Image (cartoon, rainbow, N blue to C red; front, side, top):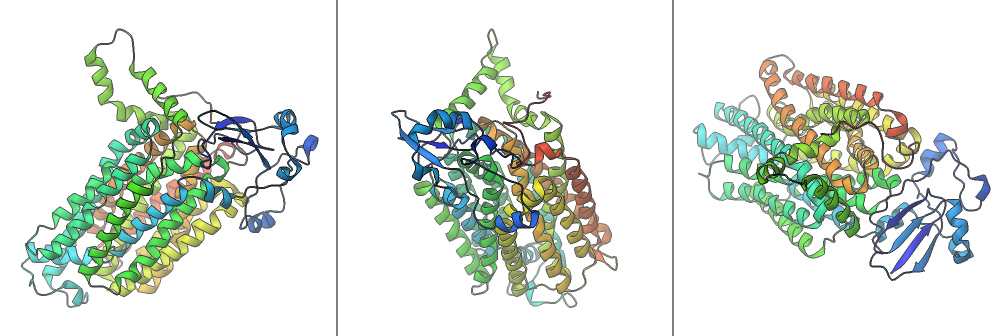
Length: 565
């Protein structure tokens, strides 16, 4: 085994298996600091903002590193201050002093990120390929089963002016079922996400990721079966899809990336994860154009089965054993109390999911993050759940239009999350990144509200793509302000809160649509989503800069008066 000593970074001891740089618990030093006493080893200057923006499009260099042999089970990687560097200077060669490890090199050699991003892309390809198919198939099925629509016909062949009443009623039923399914899915995620995240801290990420992939297969399977058996109840599809809420795959994926990436690079790596997601969504609708609805559904099912098998055979474990041990010890200290009855211990186990959520009440910073995640989550979930149904029903979007819509979402998502996020974060900091993202959400939903043509919807989607940078940035903020053995817990807790918001948001907007559907602008219900984004923007502005921005944060996680239960 070998160890790594990185110059010019604040001194924390970390342990990692090479080439897995997991469990790197350091934080890169404030980029305002110039270490004059050792300028040859590190000099980080605040340059012109424009120059910093464009230089961020390249690679982020790290200081030199040194390797040393050790017999330990886990390699000992030391992030050194100049004092530690001076102690070890005799072991560092001149050639190694000039070596630099870039962000992308670190990403490539670390164990896990590539596989996780590949799985995310496969999932997006599978689910994105059916995003325009599912509303049409479900509308037809509800119309045929409950409203006596001709079994040999399809509602997609009619325009909004000559659409049969059975199709209108079937579309309404499908939208209600989608909103209800979304509610159930997110309630399940709310109840289990923080607990699952905490379990992943104690026993590893891999098995839970595999289980999440397995559960994701059932929705597309039911979609295929519905088209094979015309009399099958369409509600089975939504029940199967809701089962995916038991395991929050994205939460565990983010925790896995936190295991192997330094704090300074967590926002960019989370952005790359969503770039893989965006790439899948960009390509998937165009794949659908060459197939029938049944063929697309079969393709989606095949991709998810392949992703499940890939996760079984190729997905590595990213959680270092010593981090898992620390999490288990923390849990045991809570559960093992002297002279406690078995009934009392069982009672505390039942309320453990709520106990895991108490981390969100740790300090004011976490409470603000929770508030902005809740209000933005209500709007985002409502947009994702109802937009496709709305534009197909009111603006006559067809499969080709849906392909263009999600192609735009995907391609712009790749650009914004994969290329813009890191330099933008370097330029304005994480705090203003989320403010910009939420402000774009306000504008986007305003455009949805008054759109009367397809072009306005496409414009709104372009503006809304900027909002995609909020999720990886918020995820990085919460990861950077929690202990390494709490990564699964904090990701799960905040995602659980977002899931609760995602359960409520579509229901609220669906109720608003019942009021506005007869107005001259039936899309006015999207103004409710704009209002939620306004509140989220205000919460973003209230975030303390020194705790939100990784470049100005102090050493280690936040230490404040705790209000955890």
